[in-house]
Length: 489
Ligand code: URQ
Ligand code: ZN
Ligand code: ZN
Image (cartoon, rainbow, N blue to C red; front, side, top):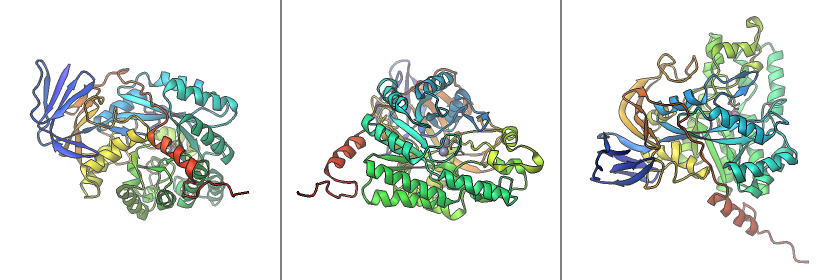
């Protein structure tokens, strides 16, 4: 099957130009002005629209078992909702229980993801340590296309790891040519603050942000970055929510250290006033970690995204319906915010929210939008230019973007399997008109055309170019440029 996309403006991370795109089978075949359509090809008219690489969301949790329940969004419904919003690939997480084999957990998650409607891959979390974990990491890299390992510095008594595990895992990832990512919150501080806030009688969702102030995120981000610096490995900080963690990243980047920062679309546009909603369920819908912050942090995050301190955008799509949130919290008379399942949705709305508040507000050019929603993620996780590009040989993961289209976001109309929407009522300009995954139309004319099981697992090779550069640099000097010469005897 061939498709030719005519009359659009192709936007890549490098720039934009009027061009046609010819798709043959699953791949982009040609990009150029005045391309002829092969016999039998379908023509899609993209006049007045942008033709962009499909969004890649590097941070999702479909059907995640967590805090006593299971996230309501599954791999089929979640990748379908993603397509409705212009996202064509997710990188989800395998999160083994402590003492659970990483390899066994990986195989379990692969089974769950077979129903996906678009392409997917997995970071694998290191939630405990012994030599078998090191061995499984090697098997996952060599035989299963895993090139990234996640570490939770929060969630004490669950999946939190200490510095000893961080160091062991970072050293192992260095051997394997894999990148380490971290959820950076000081879990010990959070645990103490949670108890303090609760014992002061603050038991509802408003207690959640009080127990995880920006300082506990800044400390952990800096600690992870410094550990990576000493070991000499690149590091990726997920869901930066505040100035404090960005400050740690900016300092390291200014010193020449290889650090990547991710920001969630929701942290850029929603502030902590949501926790003061008198409607318990509505406030609990925003309980996620790191929490939503005071408004001044959003301005800092936007500057970070514009200035390159932050490299990628994501959603951390991890949905729990109101009964699940309340079920975790216990007795309605005396709920315990510490037990509210942490997570919010947003995979369907990330691209429109970032276009409206980014490009629409003059913070991002269309090319920068493509970089932060797709291409940078593809580069960091070593799948570019197969993904995150519109070039001959790339997978035909494409979104035809209508910059003038607008919609009002609502749980009443969204395609996400969750009963709330954190952007409820927000009107955004800039919508996906047509979304293609490897040359198949998943979304057009406001209709989903997804089929379970048509998504593919995407192998991500180890040893990205930046890893190789890092190892060469390590030989010469410390990341801050101090020569590694031993003192003369
Ligand atoms: O921490 C995460 O990234 C997972 C468990 C989703 N929940 C959340 O609150 N961010
Ligand atoms: Zn997290
Ligand atoms: Zn997450």
